[in-house]
Length: 434
Image (tube, rainbow, N blue to C red):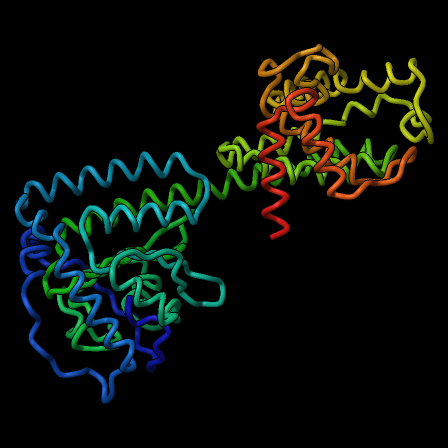
C-alpha cells in the first residue's frame, strides 16, 4: 500500500497463491516489539523524501508502542482466532445496515485497525481510468499516506495492482522479496502485506489491504478473515447499487407525478423542490437517519401534489381568496394524502403529506391535529414550507427578506409551528450563511 503514486516500469502480472499454513497470531503481534534490522534499499534511491521518512519513523514508533499489540499477544492463537471470527460476523451484520459506500469502507478499516492494531488497513477502489484510489485507511501508516497524498496507483503497478488484475489474494510474507512491491523507505516500510480483491457483481471493484511491520506477521487465517470481509463488503456495495437504482426510479416517478402540478402552477413545482432540500437538511439536524431524512425529502416533494384537484383560477388568483375558495384550496392536503396512499411505493409517506398543513396549536387542516399528534416529517415540512413561502414572490404579494422570514418563524414558534423544528431550521440557515 505505501507504493501508491509511485512510478516504476510495468511488471507482468503474476499469479500469487497463499503461502503455507502458519501461526498468524504469534507472528502478527509477538514480533511487533522487535526492532527491524536495517536492510539495503531495493531501488537506487529512496522514493520518500526526508520529511516523509521522518514521519514514517514516527508512525512506526507509535505503532510499536501500541498497548493493543501486547494484549493480542497475551491472548494467544485461540484468542486471536476468536477475535477474527467476531470481527467477521460483526462486520457482516453492520454492513447490512448501511447503504452508503464510504460509510461501509470506513467501517471496515476502522474495525480492522481497532481490533488488530494493523499498521495499515485500507480499501482501494478501481476506477474506470485504470487507477486504484484510496477510499478509506486506518492505522499509523494511513496517516502518513494521507499527509503526503499517496492516494492512488496505476493498476499495472504494485501488489495491489496485481491483485486487482488477477482477482486473486496475495499474501506477502516479506515485501522485500516480492518483485511487485514498490518500496518507499526500506527502513520503515511494512514487511508483510495481505491484499484481497473485492468483487461486485462478478467484477473487481477494488482491493482490501492490510500491512504489518514485521516479516511473516500475516498468515492464512488473516487471509481467510480478509477474504470473508471482502466478500461481505462486495455484497453490501452491490446491494447499495441496487438500492440507488431503485431510488433513481423512485425519484423519477416522483418528478413525473409532481409535473402534473407544475403544468398548472409553476410556483408549486419550484417551491416543492426548494422545500424538499431544506426539509432533508433540517431532518438530519434533528437527528433523523439518512433514510428517514430522505423520506422527509420525498414527502416534501409530494406535499402539494393534491393541488392537481384545485382549479387553476384559484391556484393562480391574484389577490385574497374567498372563504369558499379557501375551502377548496385546503382540500388539497387530504386529496394529496389519499393519492399518495394509493401508490404502494409512496404509501408510507401519506400521513406526512396529509398532515403537512396542520398547526402545532391544532388550528390547521385537514384533521385539526395538534402538537406531537402531527407526524414529525409533517412538522418539518410545515416549517420549511412556511419559510420558503415567505421569501418567495406569490401572485397576491411580493417576497419578503430572509431576515423578515426568520423573524416571522420565531414569532409563530410554539403556536403555529413546532418550536424545535423552527430552531433546527434557523440553525441550518445560519450554518448555510456562515
